[in-house]
Amino acid sequence: MKSKWFGLTSVLLVLMLLVVACGATNEAPPDSGAVQETPGDGGVIEGTPEGAATEEMPAEGTATEEMPAEGAATEAAPEGEAAAGECPVAVEEGATLTFSGWGDETEQQIYRDSITRFQEVCPGVTVNYEPIPADFQTKLKAAMAGGTAPDVFYVDDQLMTAFGQTGQLLPLDDYMAEAGVSADDFIPQLMPIFTFEDQIYGLPKDWGTLGLIYLPDVFDAAGVDYPTEDWTWEDMRTAAQTIAENTDSAGYCQGADWARFAPMVFSNGGAFASDDLSEATLDTPEVKEMAQLTADMYEEGSLVQPADIAASWCGEAIGKQLVGMTTEGGWMVNFMRQDYPDVNWQAVLIPAGPVTRADVIFTNAIGVNAATEYPAAAAALAIYITSAENQAEIVQTGFAYSTHPEQADLIQQEQDRAIAEGGLLEDSRVAYWGPNTGRINDSVSQALSRVFLGDQTVDEAFAQANEEVQEALDSAQ
Image (cartoon, rainbow, N blue to C red; front, side):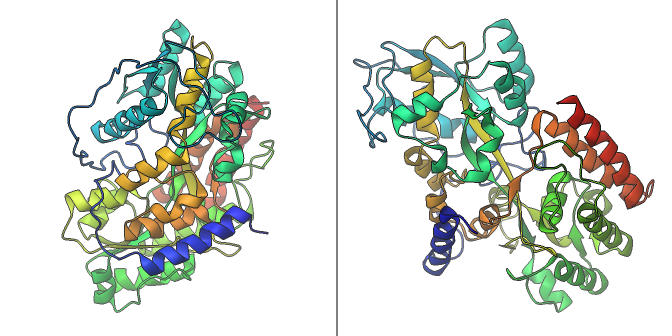
């Protein structure tokens, strides 16, 4: 059965699509998309293109990174969830925190503004914002080992693995209870990645997913009807074949990438590993059927990789009108607006598979250093940044999707709303497979690459990947 939050969110999305005007909005330009961080060592969204351009958000004056404390420490609301304008929890007097994350100037401005709002409700806390735009994970791990890590910082699946299971992240449960905050306040698929042994070590700050991106002009030239929310992967394949055969554009663009492959697998009832993370499941019909579909499309020419059409990534292929379709995320909104403003593009819900319709979800969290001198103040910052109050402000900028399901209707841009719907599907999931998530996802990408290169059949490539994943799972036991 669908959960209550899903039912409410679906209603809100339907109403939103009926009443919100289509077309461009006057929202502030997002980062490398409506949701995601620019990738690299610090970015968790491995499928996000490194070449995705960003447009800096216009700053309203010069942001202050270190803001002096004003007055006494803020007291938390005595009962229930802290009301707007109140510090989430009682904080230490004179607390001074360092907060770090990755991201370019656009993202940094988002969090400078969030810190300003936080200090309005918790004026007794000074926050020094020290962003680390590149090599975030490497630098943070070194700082943690040297005892110089920030008090509050971004947490992705790899940092959760590195710190959450070693006692280096602060459990947030007691502070959440004091603030009247529950795991149920967040989109449920986002929470397991930041939970270990029934304790919460990070609160999700944003999320992203994939949608089917297409060019109406290419479809018109091919004489093909536009994609709809009822489309299946086979419908997409048929349209891609027709486009490739009847236009100068390729049909569908997809690289050897686990993230773009994941929705196909999930929609066929498959996964990369069992739910209890004890068994690899790549050498199964659910996975191999979709891998074979991908391989067949590549062989027949209805699917191309970016390099096949002189593009650095599939989003660029859309911008250059080299391909009719691809699957990309909310980062396309800003990319197209900045780099290809005259190209007419649209987005629709991810196609359905033989079993269900499901998408992949990307997410990051805010966590607290267990060694912080001011745990209450640090927890208050993490709770406030991820609160519905603050996320509502962030959503209005177009930078990120709120992790609170009731705020789905705040997404303003037409294509962005269509993409976001995929993450709210009941069977959508985060591609998180425990401590070796990165290694496991890489095995999938490498298997697809071997198939595309013709080095192995689907059976051979995914049998090898299954052995690699099983080894990774066993090493985590």
